[in-house]
Image (cartoon, rainbow, N blue to C red; front, side, top):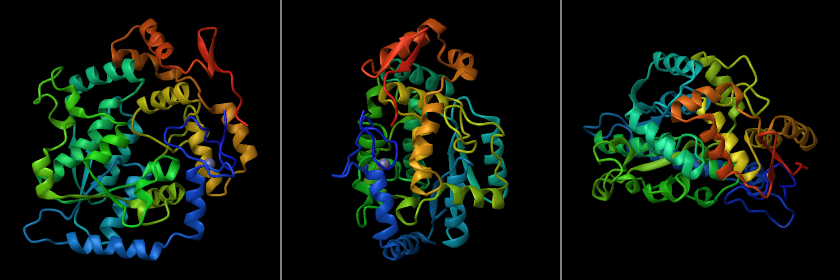
Length: 370
Ligand SMILES: [Zn+2]
């Protein structure tokens, strides 16, 4: 496999591109951010947007913030409420198989003074969707990914709040499509959401298997409703250099963010994601499909912020990437209502057999990160 010469992202990452020196677009973007991005202009644009939506007459809230209680969304919430002076409404879509620590962090965050809505799409419907797309697409929590988009658009329409601020634009930051990094490209729409965040999936495809009523939170508002509202849906990472470590420090100081005391499975850190144990499966599946996992993602962030060398990163990835989510398997089987055999057969169906072979019942890489 070909790897980025700066970080350890391989060519198998969907939508990744490399320049002539073999540097991936995420690393190029990191360089650009240091040298060429006109943050001043972008910040002015943010102020324009906030001015436009702040205190509209009859408005209930100025802005919707998708929040998890984690470091990044807490940071964005702080900035939008305290620095930009927006009346914010936090919205959380409850994930399946929540971690206790994630719940506690969200609770602590809300207590610090946020209006908040917790949406729980029918967990039984969610389970069936997740089971199906786990088998079909090798997705760990597809219904949650869908709802993270559709619920936000839906609440925007329901409460007439035409401004949404997400956190990071993962495509630009980690080496996917670069569409949203251009000038004034801050905002995206429903089509982009389906194309990129749902990899071309239109939730309408699920109608038939479920009724429209059952799928209420998993469907986008109608085109008419969206045309009427014309929501500006943006990512904070467009307006300011995205630094997860800074966010962590702020969330700890302002909202008492707590982290796992143990290292997370599949990587070396302990504070990356605290929402659901299915994230561990999701990144393991990504590893089986593309040959890079959670650790490869994390070293990329740390290399780009200059806190580790590429050589150290190679060692970390060799050691932790693609770690089997052993402690959670029982929980997963219960959630998907599967036997271990069915679970294993599902992994066999999605693994990229050009880069993995089976050894003692587990898939092992035939490539070496370098
Ligand atoms: Zn790179």
